[in-house]
Image 1 (cartoon, rainbow, N blue to C red):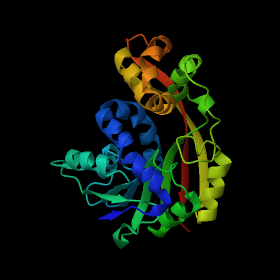
Image 2 (spheres, helix red, strand yellow):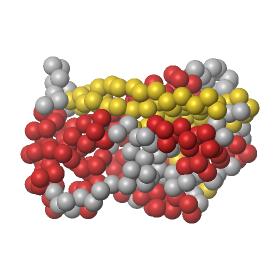
Image 3 (cartoon, rainbow, N blue to C red):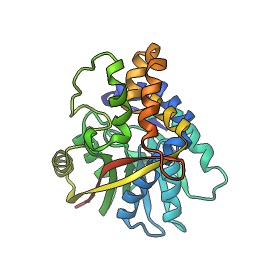
Amino acid sequence: MTDTAAPNAAQDEYWNGRAGETWVELGRLLDMQLLALGRRAQAALDLQPGERVLDIGCGAGQTSLDLARAVSPGGAVLGVDISRTLLEVAERRAEGQGLNVRFQAADAQTADFGGERFDAAFSRFGVMFFEGPEAAFANILKALNPAGRIAFVCWRSPAENPLLTGPLKAAEHLLPPQPPADPLAPGPFAFADPERVRRILGKAGFGEVAIRPFDAQVGGWTHEEAVIIAQRVGPLGAVLRENPDLRPKVLDAVAAELQRHVAADGKVRMDAAVWVATATAP
């Protein structure tokens, strides 16, 4: 079933185009970056066997599989994402796992999720891209049972996340000037302001809103893998997609920056700063 509506048309095009293909190609490395951050939000849900969970922006399915294990036996997970490209990978990953997990191409801002109702909703960095966040969370709330709950993880400010911004800063003297970013526009840092997140959830109808900081070192890549990630995704990746001819020019600066983050075991790990937001249905 596909329910990709006009409000997020730009995101639909983006995630079913180059972005989706990049995340498929680099899925293993990206999961290494995001795994611990997503599991922190999953722990906040305190899932129990037999519960039904909605995974919003499930991507290639790693989070949905984690959630399905947490609610087994007897539970079920529906993973939804706007990217059909990523959902094809999710379907393949779920084959033979023996888990009650399904996937649906859907825009969580407008989808009815087949009329299903859930005990919990979850998202790992999948809720910052809504063009109408209040409408999106109000729609998600309608899919929850009474006293259902939601937990999601989102990035804090760019300044607190050298994981994402460090490579760009290292190379910015080699790049064309970038226009100032709109802090409220859909994108990775759209929920950096916790008070904005609190207002959005409150206006959508959620109660008991709590927003807690979480800091971690993430990655564990080889230096070569870290350079690949830095130039393909995140703020630097966005610039290089528009200026591919500059890629060879910036690689030395990026590689030098990442070398500063090589740990004693030879792996690159960088600081990440996120919010873990939780709320309940009335």
